[in-house]
Length: 324
Length: 296
Image (cartoon, rainbow over all chains, first blue to last red; front, side, top):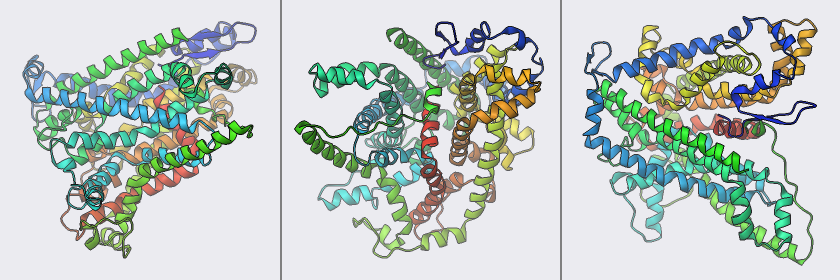
């Protein structure tokens, strides 16, 4: 799943770019298969064994149970009646699911491009030799350290309509306070704002890493050819960052689809259903409405959406590699 | 890409000043810095406000007056919440879960990463593919079945209920594998020629070259466990056995406090400060770690 695969340089042979899955295989063709054969056959199983057992017990078994649950009608575990594809049929005519999907779309479209654009702007600015650059980078990154729950309680307090500092500040300059999380009209906007806040540091760091790998000769050459700052950004930096952008795009979409803690703490999906995104609806169906079977089916729908995005991302990164 | 992010970032040295053009660009540079500083203040403000609110007495925080620093800062919120809630226990539980969980999980990831990177064995491809698919599965989907497994093992409400299911860490295994692909085969072959066994090779030759990898795995593992919320919320039940984030979430609805927000912000501060310290000390490793989770 590495975006670029690995570049393996074997002395005396040309550079071989392989996909990660075939890394060691490609290497062994030149690095002596005879010694490899002498290695103990039990060794890899010993090393991977603990991970394998834990995977079996706490990932694979729960997933199999979840799939089984999705074909049952059950409030608790173990006494479910098999109902075939009923849960999946229910999804088709569930107005709440439609609301949840729409909210998920709004939330994702609200958070992803905003966080990426701000992250890119910060990265480009902080890639220049500026005074206090290291400190600034660290400050933009700090929100990443806070737990989702911590972010949730801090922001609930800041956006408290009666005593929160946001409204107190608005009133101090003579404006009306906003209802923020307490009105269905503004709750989603507030959540988007908060999640963007947690995300910009991450986007900035990834973009910074990519910017540093652009050879400075290229930019200098463009400057000598008389390209303006904006032209250099538009025609040089942006295309060079395309692979990073495509990875960040998919990653941010996946983050947004899985965003739970902040929403759970700040709104719990309300007011009404105005901030109930899909993952919130999965949780609510299982623990609020005690519809385990339906919740499992909804969960698998979410997995399907995530899987589609992962495949899209793999194709995007492959395309990007071909272009380079 | 992951391997690249694990290496220290090249530092761009400021270019020495040149012509009048350089002078003009220096003014622009200060303007840019000023703008960025303003944004940075805005970005850090919520955390600042958390600390300020933790130090603000109930009277002032329950008013619609605008202030940036309390008139009479007090540690009363801390004293009250520590006296009425088992915050020390929460901290202890969080610390136990985070350290034991991270230590064990790093071992599991290193072993798995080594096997997947440096051995060819039957089922390797399938196993790795299955591992990677789990990245896509949000915990909410397997929450109920995983709880069932933990309940069957009789672990509910014990720290092991939190530790065990999170020991398998796909992202950690992935990072470890990517890093170990970069360990030269020649090193391993040489050890073997010297007569070192499989385990000896791993512990004496491979591991010592994995310092940066272990740093990233430890910091990432600790942070994720310290901040984890939903799984501990489901498997921990008694107020005494909660971790800090779960305890924190119970406070917002607790009517026992004269100023609930002051108490909540005090515990939030206590929850963030340890990580903030780790971040400031190991900033580079921290940033690399988070960057490498991204570039899977």
